[in-house]
Image (cartoon, rainbow, N blue to C red):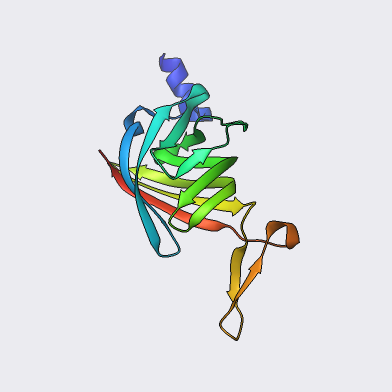
Length: 158
């Protein structure tokens, strides 16, 4: 064992995954975008291969035919950083009902969580800018460069 410890000091050792146990549980969160907020309850559950499964009581669901049919899937890194790769999802928020692709990142610090989800809708035009007359110039992902809608998820463990 001492030899293994010395080898780790000299050459570096990395674990396959960070323990997710300290961050698992339910969180009271606010989902905010574009000045509008909705309360929700978010759960972090143990997934396979060190992943974390994320569910919401309302508002954010996954695509039943997608690779994450029942829950959003995230990985956990050092310092309890949370990363979501791109995956299909549905968002029903005070800003509207959207279908599209979600990805993001964030961190769990003590009892608090803060995530940012980037969302590229497939059924909705995204406000790109205001024109000089005060109107909104819209674009769609299939009509050139598009930006994402950013949702902030902040809250505390129940």
